[in-house]
Image 1: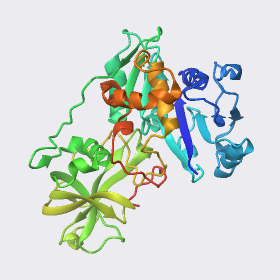
Image 2: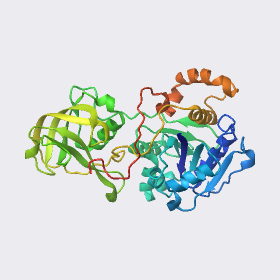
Image 3: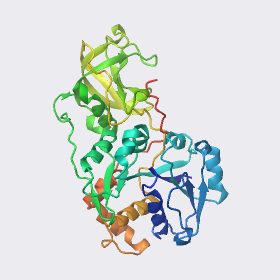
Image 4: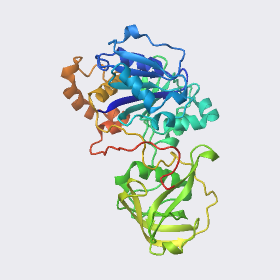
Length: 398
C-alpha cells in the first residue's frame, strides 16, 4: 500500500512549523488518520499537539541526517500504525538523504519550500547549493514576511533560474498573499519550423524539454553540442550535449541526449558539432524511460563555444528517483485545499461540510486560474506516474 509523503523544506524561521501546525489543526486534512510527523530540525516555534484536530499524530524527532534510512523510516511508520507521513525537513541537509532512502512504497505527494523573504537573498549568496537543492523539485515556494520594500524580481529570478514549473506565493506580515504573475517567455520559438538554440540558451532549452516532452516531440532543432560516445549505444548513435553547472564547479554535469547519425563512428570523443535534428520522444535504455532521441539530418564540425559550461535553471536529473503521485487522492486534495484556504483563495467559495463539498469544489477549482497556477500537476490529466527514484547528481548518461 502506498504511503503518502508530504515534504516541507526551508531554512530556520521560514514558517514551516506554523504551516504544518495549522494544517494539522484543520479537520479537512487531519480527520483522524494516523500521521507520522518526522521532525528533522527544532526551530523557534514548537508544535502544540493539544490544538491538533485529531490526536492521531505521532512525532518522531530525527537528530542526525544518517538516521534517514529505509529501515528506520519503516519502523517509525509501523510503530504506531501510521498511514501517511509529514516531513519537516532540515534546511541544512541535502534532500538526497531523504529521497534516496525512502521505503519503496513511500510516495512523494507534495513538496513545499518556505523562505523568509527578508533573509532569502543572503541564504542564496552564502548557501547557494542548499537553495538549489530545495528549489529543484518543489511545487510551491512561499516567501513569508514579504513587503513592497523587498525586490520581488530578485526573488523571482532565483526561483525561475532553478525551476520554471515551481509556483511562487508572497505572504505579507499581515497574512495577505500575492501570487507571482511575472511572465518568463522562452528566448527561443518552440513553434518555429526550426527551433534555433543559442549557446547561452542550451541549459534552459534542455531543462524545458525535460519538463515538457510532448511539446518538443516531432520538432526540428538546430544547436551546437559536444560528442560523447557510450558503450551502450550502437555504432550509428552517440550522445550530444554540454556540461551544465547548477551552482558551483563541483556540480557540473554533462546534460546530453541520444542522437542517431550514420557517421557517428567517425566522430571523436568531445568533438564539437552543430546539428539539425528531428526530436522523437521514445523509450530508450540509456534513459531508462521515455526521452528525446535526435534523428540528425545535418551535422557539421564546429569550434568550441567561448563558454563550454552552461549555467542552467536545473541540473540534469536522468531518470527520476522518487515516486511521486500524479493523481490526487482524498488526502492530496485536502492538503491542497487547506493551502488555498490558508492563502484566502477559497475561504468564502466552498461549503464547509467535508463530505459534501468535494465534487463542487473540484468543479470550482477547475475554473480558478489561481489554482491552476499553484498546482499545475493537480489539474493536468494524462500524466504518467514515475516508478523510479530521484537520483543523486550523477547523470543518466554515465
